[in-house]
Each structure stands twice: as C-alpha cells, then as structure tokens.
Image (cartoon, rainbow, N blue to C red):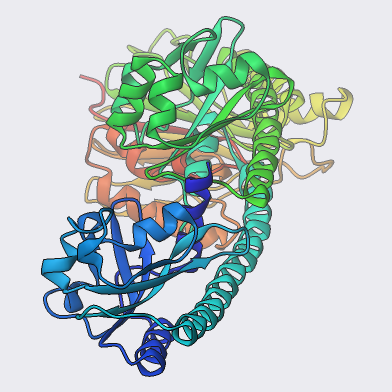
Length: 577
C-alpha cells in the first residue's frame, strides 16, 4: 500500500519521461553548483526511471529521458529512503554490475531522496561524474539543499493537483446528483454512470450489480456489452469476487493491484478482470442491501480519502436512483398494462391496410390518456361490405386515472356510434358530450372520430373532430394535406353543434390519425411539427405501414417522453369489386 501511495503521488505530480522546465532548472543548478557533467531529476515508476529534469546525458538516453531499472541507481535511494553516495560505482558490490556504468558512464554518483508530504520517496536528485570523485561535505550539503527545494516543488504540484481534484470531486457530486436523478430505467442508469467520470482518475470500467434474494445480477448497457458481462451475468453471494464480498460483509472492499486480486479472489474473478485489462477494484455496497457498485481501473490505483468519500456518496445517489426507477417501473407497468388491455386489435378489412402504434410516456406517471380504435359496423341490408369506424383520442391529464377515463370514453363512443342508425361521427361525439355533462369523469378529452364506407372503387371518409390535431391525408400522387375542420373538445359546455365532414379516398391513399404526443415538442411550435410530420408522410407513405410508423416515430424511443403517443394509419388498397 505504501508503494501504491508513492505511485499515486507520482501521478499527482504529473511528471514523466518528458522535459519539464522547473525540473530542468534544478538539474542545471546541480551541474553549476557541484560542477558535474550530468545531473538528473530521476523519478522511479514501477518498471522504469524517468528524467523530467536532465542535463548532460548522452544519446540515445537524452532523447528518451528514461532507462529501464537495469540502469537505475535511483531505485536504491527509493528502497533505502536515504542518500546514496558513491565515489566509484565500479567498486561497490551493490552497483558494480549495473548497466548504467558502461552505457551511461555513471562512475561517481550522489543521489538525494525526493519526497512528498507523506514521506514517500519518489526518486532522487542526483549528481553524476564520469570519473571517480570524492564528494566533499559542502557539495553534499548543497545537493541536499537543492533536493529539499525540489521536493517542495513536487509537493506544491501534488497539492495543486489534489485541490483541482477536490474541485472535480465537487463537480462530480453535482453532476451525479443531476444525472442519476434523471435516469429513466436501470439500463439508462448504468449508461449515465459510465459517462459520469472524467479526468486522470477516470475508472476504466463501472459495473452495477443488484440483489434479488438469490445473488447479484448485472445491469448491462445493451449498447456497451463487455464479453465478461455477457458470460457472467449473475454472481452467487459466495462467489470469490470483490463485489460479492462487499455484499456479504456490507462493507467497502478495495483491491489495490493485480497481486492482491490473485491472492484474495477466485481464478474466475481474476480471469474476468484480466479480460478487461483491469488491475484495481473498489466495490461499495448500496444502501439497504440493494446491490453493489464497483469501479475498476486499468492500473494500480489508490483512492485518496476524499476520492473514496466521493465514490461512496455516488453509491448513495445510485441507491436512491435504483429505488426510484424500480418504483416508477412498477407504476408505469401497472398503467401500461391497463392501457394495453384497452387498446384495440385492429380488424381485418378487405380493401384496407391498417397499422397502429402506441408508445407510453416514460416520465413517471405521464401515461394512460391516449387511445386508438377501429371496428367494423354491422352491414346494412343493401351493402356488400360494412363500414369501419376509426378514432384516436386523448384524455386531458396523464396518469392511471386518465387511462381509466379513456376506457370509459372509448366505450361510450363505440356505443353511441353503434346506436345511431346513420352511424354519424358527429352524433356519436355529441352523445359523449352529453354524458360528460352528467358524469364526473374529469375535464374532458379531444378526439377525431370517423368512418370509412366502400364507395365503388373508392372509400368515403366521414369524420368529426373534437378539438384534436388534424388528420393527415396522403393522396396517391404523394401530396399530403391536413383535414383541418374541427369543433370544440369533448366535455366543453357549449350549445354549438358538431359537424360531419366527408372526403373521398382513392386507391393508395393513406389516412393518418394521431395524438399530440407525436407532434408536440417543448422547443417547437406544434404547427411546425405537424408540417414536418406531413413531410415524413409524403416521403415514406408508399412504404409498408409498419415501416411508415417507424419513420413517423423515429427518435421518440430514444428520449424521455412526457406524453404517450397513439397513431393509427390506414391505406386504401381497393374498393368494392
């Protein structure tokens, strides 16, 4: 853990195998004050030494600013934690075999430990001569003073980075509180989690596992499925994984590096993390035993206390988001099941193609008020084929109560149509108006109610509009028009009569009925949206109706919807034979 803290301090200092003006300045001071040909600010990484400060080193080492550990005297300063002073490196048993002697001409060496505020030795400030040399007390004192100043510079850089990280942590908590609160479902929650972290300490992998009484199951983002997630989608509580241990023991589990992973966990866990190139793991249990949130890094990583506190706080936000999304999912499921039970199976009508689309709202209780309907009328004695009633409507309000009212209004509209001898859409809407005047069903509704009758080689549309967005009609030549005639919405107290309107539909005409969820946007005028929808209908109206509905609803499934959507499309194939 101490070495891991040293590596983390090096990362915070932001220095590696690249020239740094401040570190080069210290190397120049050493060469001038001690009159040596070579001076290095040498920092020891896990598998090499790097020289952010350097003067006098020969090529190719000067360009590389690094050497393998086989050429490092700095490693002895780090391991010992004290100066290494050698008059002639060739005669000391510890250094005589070092490749730094023939390759870098390191004959005399004086290295002082560079330390951070916690006492970690990060490397050395060293003076090098190509000849044997007796270092004087004054020279060593000067080198020690310069090393102290260089260490202060390193500590300031580390402190500055920590302050920046603290600011980043505050920003992370703010982003987490906002982002996770807007998660639509568990998959979206995982996606937002993986996009939440930024910067040098960004984890390489984030996994959310939820408890179900028998173990832990992974919440997987279908757009970013890792092989290990597909292969191991569940964990037994007694599995040899850090996440399972965190769940069993209700505590945070930290695995600092690959060696700790191998020594403490199952071969399956090691293989899984190896397949993702991961080395460090932090698993935090969620509140109330809901599951575990795990962060993984591709390199050894030692979270500072502030970072661990932030990650624990994020786990708390995730716990709240899991509870909220599950609650909302249950509420939505109830409303959607109620809604689905009230939606119509479309009839098969010779000469007509019909297709419908229903998309529930995704924002908490905003679901339940929209419907579509289609059913055949009893044929009159002289008719060879019956007419077809069509309607779409929208109850004012969006909740389970709206779904209940929708079912009642739809049933009343059906009954009024079937009871009226002429099956007039306007008369049926008028009958529902009268019922709404008496029954306490709420503030009202909008609807388009129509009927299609075969008329020779064509179909005749009769419709009445109660304050609803206008139906769109695509004619065989590809032009689209809005059937704009309308009256007041259902339930509006008014003595004004309702009106029927008629239009003849030729073969290959397409009639589109829809609710406002298809065209209403916060950032656009609804008339503009209807014109855009008309353009889409013109472009795609000759496609099979399911493909047309996909084009009309493109993008709606990918963003949160505050309103549900109902669409009914009808294409005329032929009239009577």
